[in-house]
Image: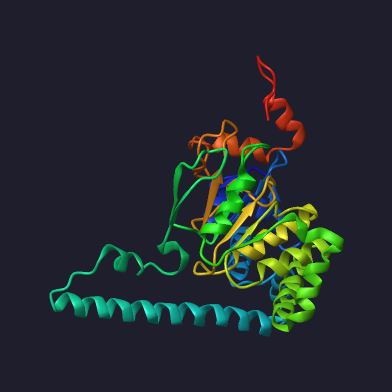
Length: 340
């Protein structure tokens, strides 16, 4: 077979569908999609494959797990009710938020008619959820108290940097300054996650949320473990969460299922800050508009927000941090001694 204008390669198909090439490979691995092959053996997506992939992407956007997607495509309604109920709850939440915003706009227009102009802060609060605000704070050591501004805050923010860059101190500081935030450290794994299990035993509502998340993740290929349960017990709690090395104790399929689960949350959800050095968690090709990357450079210059495209300032440093240990070792070798 030879590709023509009607057939797209994997990167072109992913771009047109608004998903990552990794997502297309995952659909193929799960038997949901079967791209044709070019004469050279490359995957190619024709009109039929693109229509099928678009259906899968739409079902994923509704919050369906890959197992649920497979059942829908086979005409099996099993499991649709809870998935649709969860999507309805998200939509109703957005509707309530929108109604509140409309009411605020109505009030500001009424004030304007009476000759009172709205303040910049009042206008900024019309932006829904966490995207409408930012924070400013003094950086801890090793940055010497320099003032840092972060905003707007996205539902998902990745914190990344090489060893010794100060990213853990930045994460701890964020947990202090973000209103209502909690820090979920590596001690969540102590004694097989005993503290998390005790919290779940004491809080039936939290256990129900964790069980629902676990069911979705398992259907997407995750492996249930003490590390995953302890992580979900922190993530499913109320309020923003700052997580130390979110991938700790999780295999790659579990990491991929987890980040897909976190991305399906609505844009108005409470923010999560994820420390990571995993390319399964932080797939630069899949970063969306509701996500941000915070880089802590190796030379202890202040942290910076990095755009997820090649050529952007800091992009190569982020990509290097996400490389395998072997690749990082090769990249660090140059005319002088390697540094960490």
